[in-house]
Length: 81
Image 1 (cartoon, rainbow, N blue to C red):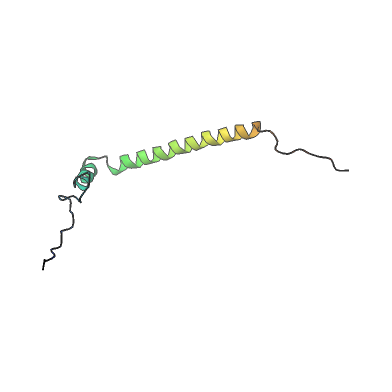
Image 2 (image 1 turned 45 degrees about the vertical axis):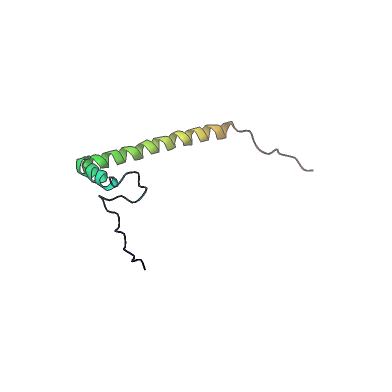
């Protein structure tokens, strides 16, 4: 009879089979947290991203309004006697 030995769970130093990052993902994430911008900078960029998206929304709303004004009426009035 063969004994079953459990395989250890993959950790930061040991990658899961077939993992492209070979276990470096958590290490790289930790590196970015340590050497990335502080919270006030991240907050500024988050707000800038929101304002950029609001600008895109405003442009789309304006274009939709233009196209809606140019659209021909869909129905015709018919006088019924």
